[in-house]
Amino acid sequence: MSEPFSRLRRSWERVNDALGVRPVALMVLVASGFLLIQLTGSAAGQFRVRAVGHAAEVAHAAPLRTTIAEVAVAAGDRIEPGQLLMRLSPEPVDRERAEVERGLEVVAAEARLASLQVQVDEETWLDPEVRSRRGRPSLGPAQRALHEARRAALEQRRDELESLRGALEVRAELAGIVLRVAPNGAGVDRGDELVSIVPARATEVVAYIASDTDPEAIAIGAPAWLEGAACSARGRVLRSGARVEEAPGQLRELSVLPVFGVPVFLTVPEGCSLGVGQVVTARFARQADAGSGARE
Image (tube, rainbow, N blue to C red):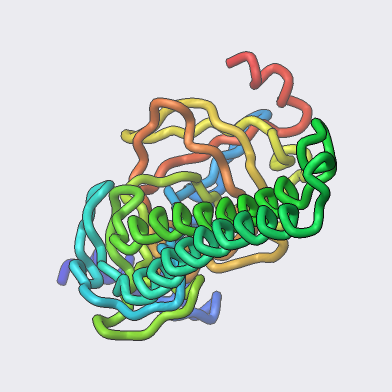
């Protein structure tokens, strides 16, 4: 080993001893500092943070109490809009539909019988001259209105059941990846989760910023510019989190240390196609510069 290199190594070791740290720890400290600069790099009148595309999972819920008759996907599958996810048993719908049809038959029979009964009663108890009088009171119209209301209610329920039967084929609302799926043959109640999907494209962007950031810079509606290969356009702040949280691993870059910050949710600008988990840079205008920055 050359003498100049040996002197350099000894000097490095003396620096480490003076600081009370080991070389590995010092390298981690330097890397963390570099990451902090990358995550919160700033310039006059603005600051930048790393951000990531995000989309809330979409859950498909059971429309009624039934059982799962067929599962067409598995967790991890990529799906497209309209793709069949599962089929539910139509037995509860068909059973109620049969009851409604029987109810319609009963109402129709009762209406005919009531009409005949009113006619017989009037012929029996009313004087012929009174029966022939125009505009005389009669129970007939009231009886018909009652049965018509019952018939209309049953027909409305029949239409609802027909629509509900169509919902027994559960299809994807958007493209994405299946996160969870209920097992075949399982019983489900109305509102239970059947399939949960993570959308393929981000519906919002999340930046993690320091808790002492100027509130005006991240107020709802404040401008934020996204910069990256997938998107370079102006968005705005949707909302902010209430506490400091750990950022996703994509934002660590070279550091093995976790990154923490207050999550700030941004819109995905029109024309940007940002994937879930894709990293971009979010640039915010400081309060004093917000007016001039908005003109960029």
